[in-house]
Length: 514
Image: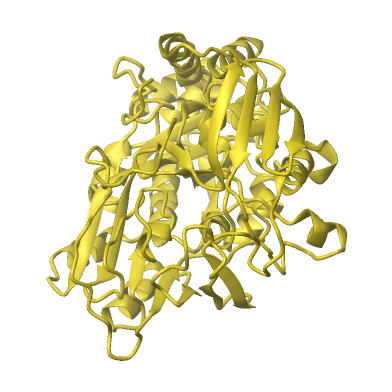
């Protein structure tokens, strides 16, 4: 049975450990972390953004915890067994408590996951738990998950924070007044400014070494880096502007962790848009993406040029799967084949008397994405595409635009890709909850279902490689880069041991190691 690791995993490049902590003169026991966006919610079941996930990891605890090397290890559950391929039985630790001192039992686990899989609850991550057919409490400390089919990635997703059934049913809004059993509890949330948390002494591992964690929301990457350099922040991490990464990495006042990440930056094609419904149109636009310039010049090499939907760190990766490469002449030839030609001699492709017009969009908080979008706009226009750029704040861009399927081409990213299923299933299966463009392909549906139901890793690999090969032609997504992960912290953090995580979670910065 899995047990917590007594030493830091040697296989994770994203772990930095040192001893001999020093207490900052002005901030003993406190940690101030800079982040780019505010959390949309503090209910872990409704989380959609990176800040919400990271705060939830502190305020709540799940059945398991995911280590930096992506291993599921016990958290609230002290052990588990699988009597058959469709049954998981978890034994909770004795005397678990929420941060208000109330008991946490199997009924809270059942409540959390029952609401999570309820279609009416609208959980963004519901598709990750689709094979979960029933959750039941066998006694106060024992929870049984019954699955409709074998489900290989389940343990990777069971770090979902457990919420209090009693509090929720009494009307407490977990989105605003969270009650969890994690290492911290909420002190104050000033929307758009900061999220302040303090020690939760009831966490089963004991109180963290840090008394208070404050997340400061500073949307501009460079402003956040400057606040860190000025000593106003103790920690900053991705997303960071490449020029700031280079400067901070050379500054011996700071500790740094620079490694491969668990995210992608990609173009999301709205396949429900009439202009982009034909895969050949998406192929043509993809051939206008100069990955080398975006990754090496705009992002200054902190990311890696992508070739497919599968991260190179994944067991399912194959270098033989290739997306279209940058080829302006090839793109124009494809447009011509589809009837878009420069019939007026004005440099703009047209068809049936209408110019070829497209809108590409991203959010304003990431200046490198803005720069990449403007660069793409210039390349598209040089190829004869009348191109509009739309830039808005993250809530407007994500919630009110992309997630409503109002975009044509959107530049954005996915993080925390702990399994190929995490990137592909909910986003690309027909009627998936994150399939905002309404993409549908029966062959892909079959492959994605096989990838999550096969327990043999080689069979899973074959399914995901076939899926990635299909997607490299269909192109609902064009993956520009595999994201790197960067974290910088002041040398005098008041903890004895530091462990960083490429997911960006913060438990390893407040005194816990796996």
